Image (tube, rainbow, N blue to C red; front, side, top):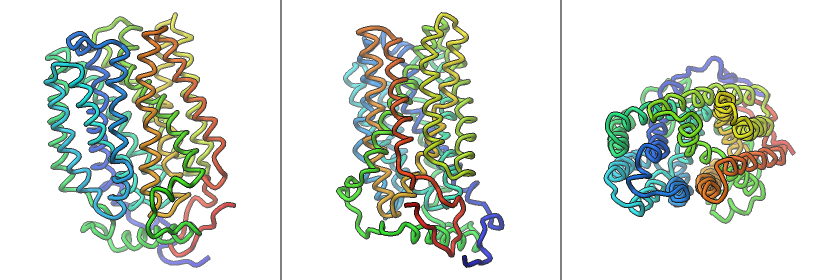
Length: 439
């Protein structure tokens, strides 16, 4: 194997970890706050004021993901060929406007329309930011970089839970949407001043770090033999069998994630008979656990190169804790401990999961692939909350939670059935060498 002064990443400056990750993380946090604040608004008075039933609450929580479909693939392609920075900048403006309008709705169908539009506005975010991460972090670092960015879910939960509880208690549910919408405009300023799409565009990066990134990422692309496609069409992306395995896995995973996330405040309120302020505090601990779980599993995956294993194990843990949260409901604190366990596993598989498209597809195809996987997979974000709401109406909340546990177990099984080439043969890749794909 050839060597150079850039043959290892240990000697390379790491400014990108401080310059790129924080603004992306903050923008993602704001998007997630706008997405899930309805989970606190519903038991905080919105359901009573607008006359919303359990099934309608599930529909309002889930319809976001129907709108979420529309910009997934375009967002990924824009990030590859154009500017993800501009895309997210305009998205922040849209999030602010829609969130403020949600705070002044007077009818449940107005709420449904705005939730759908919010889904459209947020639809391109994840494929865009994941593509931006792949522009800045080689494969050996990408699991950790993805995990830190996807950590916006637990961090947003830690921030949103007490903030939402406090705002609803001090003011009302309407101010929750208005205040959090205005925060998007504050983040827009930070985003415009700090982020860059690629190393070649940044003014602060050292020549050593820039050369290392450009050469390493180019070497990784050369190693993806037979996958270079100059104009990767949607049909080309969808013709790959593994793509559909990833879509199905993500669908069942997102069903569990958003079924849990959007019903957690309601479950906690009924389990503990607490006020919304107390529910907000109780909801912090699951998201603190989520941070620990994401760090643990992404680090283990990067260290061993095993992607399939460290997607499936957290999913099994999530499914088990979901089941135990109902099985142990006679003991409030044991049931709450199981809900905290759900939080620990909530996003532990996500950072590892999103390293897989970059191993299977060229950069050209990976942007569109991420969009398709996220778009179709996130239909589970519609099905999870809605299914729980319907099962509550027809049977009980227990039935809804068991449904989520089954969905997560199916996702774990699908992770184990992914092809061996999803795992990394070599964890580190020399910028001047190519990496052989596993047969």
